[in-house]
Amino acid sequence: MKKFSIIILAALCAFFTLPAYAQSENAGRSPAMAFSAVNPDPVLMGMGGAGLATASSPAWASFGNVSSLAFSESVLALSAGYRRWAPGKDNCPEGGVSVRLGKALWLTVGGGFQNGEGVIEYSADGNKIDESTPSSIRANLGAAYAINDKLSIGAGVHYLHSSVASNAGFNTASFDLNAFLRIAGVNVSAGARNIGIPVKDGNNQTYMVPGEFFAAASYPLSLGGDSRLNIAADAAAYLSSGFAFSSGAEYSFKNMLFARVGGRLSNAALPSLMSAGLGFKFKGLSLDAAYVALPSSLGGSFCAVLGYSF
Image (cartoon, rainbow, N blue to C red; front, side, top):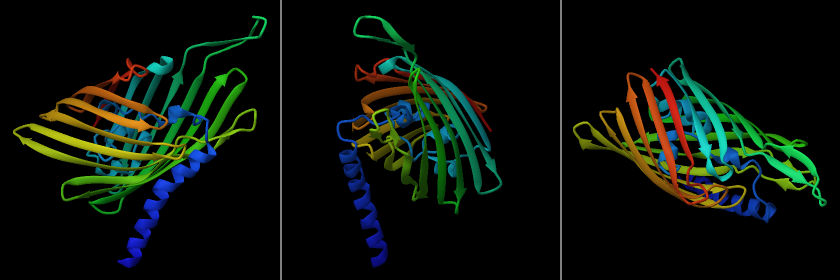
């Protein structure tokens, strides 16, 4: 018991001191490839980013929490959608697939493309030097394994590419490692997400990918009849600097109609926000949408996703 307590204490110290160290290394500079911190899962997006300790979106697990796959009721799930990200009015087609292999193993893949507004660069005398369209690509691969009916582990890898000009592109990889526990009706999860290899610009400046250590919990509550309420809360400490806390709720009726709302407080790569979402599911088909209402810098961000599972 004493040894276990020492391990927990060391883990907590690492959770809070590593982001502080990373902040000093990255002082005065924005994180590289901030798009990789965005989770396009429409369920989580509708709940202010909360929900890593839920298993309701298996097709999107490669973007969020791979270990949650072991608690999914689906053998196969696939989903594709469109996201409009307001800061650069970026267009983002994205999608994912998960499949169960045997009794204890799941695999998932996902990816997306993000295309921003065109940028024109001029010289001091007003001549056009370069014209480009910033873009980014990410491709994910993950696997989850059920240790027993209460505990699972998951791991994932991401390929990340960002092109900020016609002659400036960056490539790197990032990794996930997480665990999911279901006990006494409560879901809890913790781990590391998007821990990436730093990238360097033309001036040899090092920038960190916005990886995070996270802890999350969710509690499904029956409201009687065919109504249920799922409450979720997530906390994250970012290696590139900063912390974030998200909380949200999902109301469901007959596991067919869904309404979601939530918010996030953050001083990290992704700003604070408030969001809401709706969902519909019938015979394996699903349609989900989410909208970010606040702040003004993100207002107008939305996603619409079509999925199928069995």
